[in-house]
Structures are given as structure tokens and as C-alpha cells.
Image 1: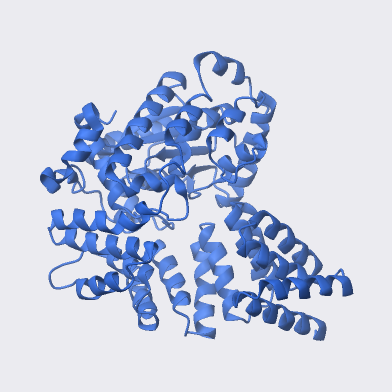
Image 2 (image 1 turned 60 degrees about the horizontal axis):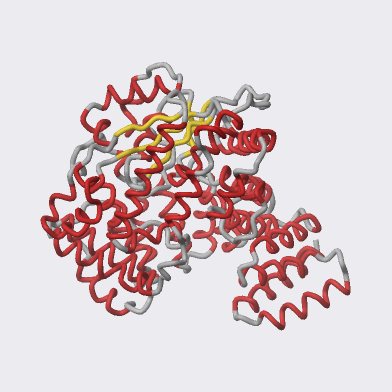
Length: 539
């Protein structure tokens, strides 16, 4: 017990020094510790933290894993390992690490919060909340503890508790732009109930911070839209993205080449060769239902409809399949999805693709809470439709389509993750239009080359205007019997970790169809950039 206490104190002291940017000193001290005792877990954890600080997350996972192996009875090492695993995208292993940490003594607020973060990032918000609550009970001073708790409460549909949590966050840090953004997103803003007097001066105060500008600018734009001031709302969206756009290299991510490379994974001739009988020996080989499409075009809605069926569980937005393709191609780039990886995937044999399918199922089933069927709602998996079909021939792929103008506006007006360059197109309306055009071409390619009983397009507008017809069509495509519960998707109490967490807990409404028309001639540039697609049917 004394040894564990001593190692914990040494660990926390070292982490404190790293937080103060004393990397060189801690690194030197850690090497000395290893020379003194190669089985001491502390130095490996410190070195892992330094590696993570400098962006070497693969090395961090290796070193955190070493520390956890050396001292398996300390929750710290499993928690830090789990956190690192979420960064590299290994959700299954991260969840396992969190489970191991949770089973041990947790009496530190930061540790409890870390475990909660792992559970929330892997989609287990019901497991995250008790640890966030523990963190707050142990130390209610840090604003981010309250923010994390509020976010998980929002994703579970506890909106009143979430609102209280965001307000608690702001009472401790009035400049918390994420809390402001989340608070505004919880409910419709009105003339009597809005935060513009707080948001406008804060935007000016934090104007040099690109992420703050995005969050606050979007919150202001959302407020103005709710108040019916659409042209002002659009101007604020432009203003919110200006700094991020100016600091983003237009060539940092080649969408042209990415779409072309994705398209090359399936053409008429190779498909017949690569679609050899699967060697997957599993009663779950038809379990996955991939729901893909542009963000904010109805993917979460369809996910909720299908996961309201008694046989289907929503597994969340899994990044397992892209990670397996990246691992199999062994490309050198530091991005999971890129041109080089798609091009090299053309060299993967049927045996390798089948093995990827097996590994995907083994991992995804553990994250789907034991359901017979599950949904994987990672929108950008539309790039992988050809590879998904080859690796998992019995999987269903559902792509959401929505009118071009509404699709582009919804992508532009929604603040997507700022952590990945895949979404850089949303910082400019013209780039968003170009992305949509390439997406439309790729969907035409999949439609022509993938079997109709495995690849289906569904219109968001179709669901809105005839919910029962489209719900029956979805269930039939997935091989599921009709259940009335699918019509009551808003009663589904499963977690929703997307920007639609509020909307999908309400009955279906048509208010967002044709939303772009409210902006008048301010979207003429978008219409011009879309060309003939601007008024085309979404399918």
C-alpha cells in the first residue's frame, strides 16, 4: 500500500510538472527512474504523457500500456491508457481500459473525470455520468467537470439537467465558449430568452481565438436565426468562420483526389473478382447497418428510427472500419482517411478484406451492447461503401440524401468538429458546394456498382413527408419485421452524441425542409456554385 501511495504521488507530481511545460526536466527524471527500476510504472506514464503532448499518440499508447501492465491495480494507468486509445480511434480497447479503471479505487476528481471522458467518447454516456458526478462531488471548482457532466446529460436527453450544468460551467468560467454554444443549442431562442448581450461582447473579447470565434459566432448565428433575422444570421456564420478559413491552407486536404481515390476502390471489373465468397464464420455477418451521408442530412434520424426496433442497437459513430483499412494498407501518412490509403486498398486481397470484416465485427459487436443487429452511423463512411461491401458482403449501407441547397446550408450552419481537416469544406459555402457535387458523383458511382439489396439511398424529405412509407422501406431493406415503435423514434431513450441530440427527441417536423429559401438572395452564390444540382431531386 505504501509503495502504491508513493508511486501515485510521484506520478501526480510529474504530471503537474508536465502541465507546467517542464518536459525536458521530467523526461530526464523519468529516464533515471527507469535506470533505477525498470519495473517502475511511473516513468513510463510520464514519458507517455510527454509523447502525447508532442502528438506522438501511438507511442503514448505503447508507454501507457506498459505502465498499466506494470501496475495493474492502479486506476490511473488504465484511465490514461484509455484516454490515449480514444485519440488513436481504438474505441473497443478504450472502453475495456475504462472498465478496468472503473473496477479499481477511484478517489481523485481528475481521475474520475478522465474515466467519464473515455466512456462518453466511446458512446457509453450512462456509464460516464456517475464518474462525472463523482468528479464534481470531489471537487466542484473546475468548470470543465460541470461541462462534461452536462454534455453527457444532454446526449441522454436530460435537457434540464444539461442546462443547469452549462450554467454551472459558466458561473465558474464565463468565457467557456463551448458551454455558451451548447447552452444556446439546447432550446429555441426567443425575444424574451436569449444570450446576445453576453455573446456579442465575448466574441469581440476572444476574437483572436479561432475556435472561440467558431463556437460563439455559431451561437450568435443560431440565436439570430431563431429570432427570424436570417440575413444577419448568415453574416455571422461568415464572420465566425473567417479566422479559421484564413488560417487553413486550401491545399491541406485534396478533396478532388480523395473522392477519385475512393471511387477507384470499386469499378465494374474488379468488383466481380473481389466479391468472392466471404470466409466470415459468424452468426452476426449480417449484423451491421451502416448509415452514411453528409452530416446534418438525416443520418441521426434514420439511426433513431432503426434503433427503435427491438432487434437493433445504435452503436454510435464508429471509426473501426476506416482504422482497419488504414492498418491493412500500412500507409505512412498520419491521417486515417487519405488518398494514399484508398489507392493502396486496391491491392488488398479478398482474404485480407474478409479478415478486416471479421475484425470489424468482433470489435463492433462489443460496442453494440449485445444486440443481434446494430447501426454504425459514421457519416463519412460513405467514402468506404465499396470497401465495406467487399469486406462485409451481407452488411447494409444506407446513404441519406437531401436537397442540395439544404444540404450545403445545413453543413455550413452547423459547427462540426474542429479537430479533423475532413470538415474544412464547411468553412466556405463555395467549397461546401464543391464537396456536395463530388459527393453526388460518388453516390452515383456506388449506385451503379453496388447491389441494390446492399446499398440504398433514402431521401430526408421523403421521410419527412411520408414517414411510414419510408420507415417500411428501411425495415424491409434491412430484413427487419415491421414494428410500430420505429414510428415513435423520438421516444427512444438511447444516447445521442450528435448535433441532432435535441431534435431527434421530438416528433418529426417539416420546418427544416426548404430552410435555405428563408435567406433570400443571400444564397445566390451557393446556388450558382451548385449549378444544375441546386434544384435537382435529392435522389
